[in-house]
Each structure stands twice: as C-alpha cells, then as structure tokens.
Image 1 (spheres, rainbow, N blue to C red):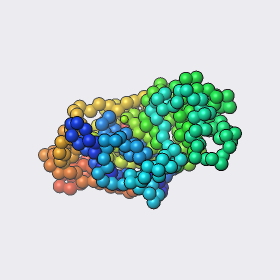
Image 2: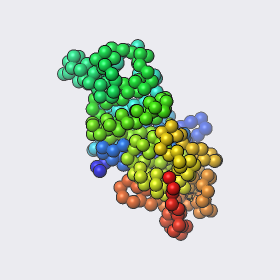
Image 3: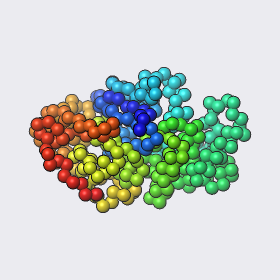
Image 4: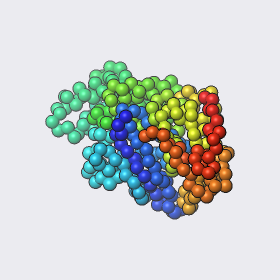
Length: 335
Ligand code: SF4
Ligand code: MG
C-alpha cells in the first residue's frame, strides 16, 4: 500500500519544571493509505503526543527536536499555522475520546456541522444541511433530518460519538485520527463504534489512525499496529504479525498477560511490573531493560538493533540480532 503520511525520526521534548522530558525519541513509521493503523501503549508511552504532532497541535511547552511528518510534499511539523489550519479539518480530522468535551453543548448538531463547512463559501446553507443530514444518516443516527436540530445532551453517549464521527468526516478528510474513541462507552456501544469505523473506512476510502491502550480494540479494528513504550516505537507490523508472532519482549508480555481474552474489546492494557524510566534523565541501552524478563548486561549499555521486515514491520531488541541473538527467540506465541 502507498504511504499517506510518513513519520520520520520524530523527537519531541517537553520543557517542565522537573527538566526536559524526552517524550518522543526518534519515532518512525508509515501511515499506509486506506488502512487502519493502531498506536498502542500504556499512559506515558507518547502515543497521544504522536497524535497531537500529526495535527500540529503539540502543547506550548513541546519542542520538536528532530524529524518530520511528511504528508504528500509537505512537512506538517514545519508548516505555517495558516497551512496547518487549512489541513486540519479538511484533510486530517479527529474524533475525540469524550464527545461531551469536544462538542459544543449550546449549539445544535446542524449549526455545529454548518460551522465545520465554513471553508466552503460557495456551498449554500441548504446544501450544507443536506450534507450534514446525509452524514448523520451514514453513521447510523436514526431520523437524521430531525435529530440534526437537537443538541448534544439530547443524544446518548453512543449516539454522541456517532455524531462526533459524522462531524469529523463531513469535509471528506483523507486521514481520520481517533483518540481512544470508545473509552467513554460501554462494551456494547464500543463494539458498535468499532464496526462503524471499519465500515466507514471502507466506504469512504479513508485512512484511520486510532490511538488506544485497548489491545482488544486494536486487534478487532486495525490492519497495522505501532507499539510504543516510553517514547519509542519498540515494535510495529501488520496486526496478524503483532498478535501471533510478536518479536519484542514488551509486546509479548502484553499479549501473554491474558491471551484468552485478546478478542474482548473491553480489555485494557495489562499492567507489567515495574515503572517506565524517568525520561528527564540521560537514557542508554534498551528503554525496556528495567522491566524486561530477558534483560542482559548489554541491554543497559547498548541501543538494541532494529530488525525490519518489509515496509511496516520492525522490532528493536538484542535478542533478535547481533552478538546476543537468541536463535530460539521468540518462542511460539499461543493466542
Ligand atoms: Fe529486553 Fe534486552 Fe531486548 Fe531490551 S534489548 S527488550 S532489555 S532483551
Ligand atoms: Mg493519552
């Protein structure tokens, strides 16, 4: 598949009272066209920071210290605010975790959706309403020609998230970003939203990035997966590679915690003993060494090699290559 957007060697620091937090370090992965890619990691892994970087909406105390985000012939990290505003909403749009905080409670959906189309001065108000009704219908809102005149508080949680998806898709973006899109929902609604995103992705030929700590959701929804740990991409690949043949000890620890429940969408990321390293301190060796069951002395000293297979697949670990290569690693993963 073609690459729609390419994250290359992205590093981001946050300036904080505790010092510089090296929140993302040399992140690279392609976002392949017409696919759904999941970015998974525990809190503090940097997965949300990646999402905000893609939107050009990093916090004020963030500093991009290296890299680029290629979108066609543009670099979104070094685009002007005007260029970014034109890209956001039109070509790249976002579905938020909690529609209650991202939707405007005092405006009807019809009014909010008309406002989203403000860059289309040649489209009449009547036509904008028709487009909005059609999109609300597409995301499964019943009687969209009536519900469009209602306010967010008239909608159930699931319906509000459907409306959020309709608003994000209204401009026909090439790339849809979703930040933990089902966290505010119960399991039944969560499954419905996952299937809706899958259907819409196919129907609209969109590319979708989902940030989540929910492995079940990633397994259900995604084609490609990027696994983040403490600000690095430690493994990436197609979803079947990751879930059936993970190479990195961290990914495997996540999967082995409770393999029987991997298809349960309510499953949250398991807790692995230990803490992520302090990202304000100098870092050396493998970022996962303090928690890794297979850690060797070299792991604290030398950066592990990156193994790549094809355009999407990579894993970083001394067990996979070099003098500490273990030919019996990884053992079969029974999930
Ligand atoms: Fe574990 Fe060493 Fe591999 Fe890091 S490089 S994941 S510490 S075995
Ligand atoms: Mg987050």
